[in-house]
Image 1 (tube, rainbow, N blue to C red):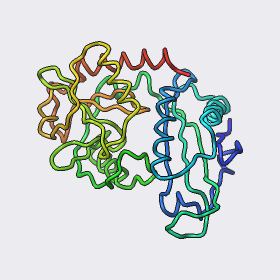
Image 2 (cartoon, rainbow, N blue to C red):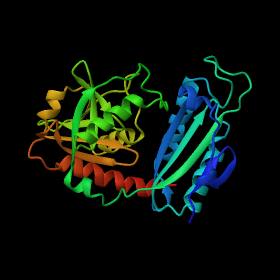
Image 3 (cartoon, rainbow, N blue to C red):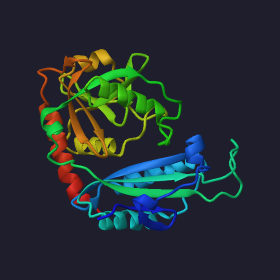
Length: 284
């Protein structure tokens, strides 16, 4: 089956999917993106992802050319046309194509593209063994709460992780972990507290993070929202990160140092189980 992509109102073969070289997403990174997981052919946490998409678009004064209902229809059509049982849907909205000028164009219609991608999420070998992470300086701009397509700092962080044989890079500012290059960072302290940084302009409001916090609260797990340092992470009982397509991923080494016994911990394993159970129950 040919891979089918959605571009500005049309479903087209990947080979024929085109966007103008004058598109402001290409010239200025003037756009927003969103990613949601697909499990059993259904959309996971999709309401939260679409709400975040709308919020990010509002923060840069950009209106989506599609209603929420129309976006859902596109997502489901991509799942069906590409026969995606497990994977992701990527969506991107930019300010459209216009002559190059920093100020917003007056008449350019927004560009909306989306595609489906197969990816193994359940039964991931990495989730069983845990992964390595490294820490890197956080080089990003001040509005990290906006899911901007300007991802160069994250790309460089992820590439540094790849070169180090790691799966993720925890970005660090003033000695404290902000978040992963494409994830939300957590630790579990030796006192049993599940710790993650509170929301602000310094971090992206993760949809999987939100679901994990809700699950932890419902089960009266000890949850603390505060910044934690790299040293705290090294000394933690457990460490993990969350994202739309990793769900809950145990981190067993950080900067080459084992976290506790170097194996996925019980709290991380339990949260992953709970999330998968809830995701399947609430999938759309």
